[in-house]
Amino acid sequence: MAAAVESAQPSTLPNGNGSTTANEHRKYHAAETPYSLPNDEDEWERLDVQHYGIKAYFGGNNVGADWPENPRRILEIGAGSGAWAMEVAYQFPNAEVIAIDISDVKPDRKPENCTFKVVNVVKDPWPFAKDEFDIVHCRFVTVHLPNFKELLDKAIDSTAPGGILMFEDIDCDFVSDLMPVPAAIPNFFDIYRTFFASVNVDARPGPKLAPHIMASKKFSETHEYVMPAPMGAWTRDQKLNNVGLAMRKGLVGAGQSQHGKLYKFGMTQEIVDEWAKAVCTPENKLYMDIYFVWAKKKASVV
Ligand SMILES: C[S@@+](CC[C@H](N)C(=O)[O-])C[C@H]1O[C@@H](n2cnc3c(N)ncnc32)[C@H](O)[C@@H]1O
Image (cartoon, rainbow, N blue to C red; front, side, top):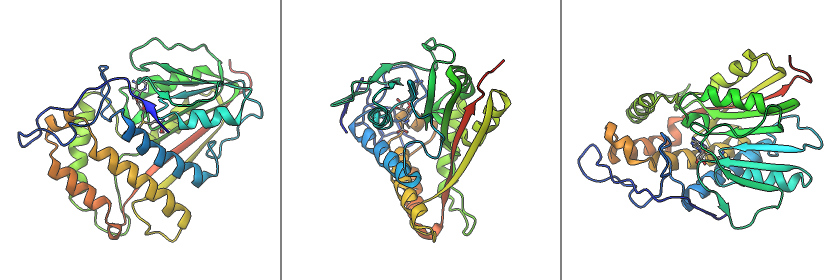
């Protein structure tokens, strides 16, 4: 699924060893943002691998949520390649799907009822009205945002009475219940989290989504599904192994394509390589918890 990119900002900052980073050939957002992942064709492919793994696991783009039969307006926040937004637009031809992203996502082909808009959800005024959307979806975005709860509050506000809010994100760490976690894992994540803390980004938003949604008291039901995505086909659950393999490809790709600004915080190619090796060793029996949360807004909210 091809999508044009908005900006080119090669990563040329020095890494911990004084040489340039491994990611000089990648393109990044030109906009001032803590976002550390590229916005090029390879990135859209990486996201599509994750997208199709998750879709196959849940058997659809609703990931278990109880969608209205005839939604009128649907919002996708942080659309990435646009795969989710476009598929949902094809699924509901009478609905208007609005897909926003800090990048100017331009798919080669898209359904007419799907519109892409450039919005920086951190800096730009929120362009949507209260109660505007029957479905609001946001996946793997809060983990990149300063004060992600501000975005969550805006999304809560723009979900229509009776509508469905879906927020999905990771608890950014690799853990194991069966084996010792190799040192390469905290070696990477300590630097990763130090960088993100410096720009006020919480790298572990997943477990905080459902409690924040419930605390708003605007939803009649809130569901949280925690997927322990295995890094390799090491569980007895083949379905889980399949989505884990897709997520492993996506997560390792994300770790390897971080912007050079992380290298200012001590990241080196060696640390990334060791981390990737540990993640891709099934004998380590590592997994990452991914939180899939959906909630139904009360029919009338006072
Ligand atoms: C990891 S990708 C996830 C994309 C898509 N939701 C998916 O699951 O495939 C995060 C997306 O959030 C977008 N993003 C990051 N910061 C943003 C911001 N401040 N405003 C709008 N979009 C942002 C990025 O451009 C990227 O497309």
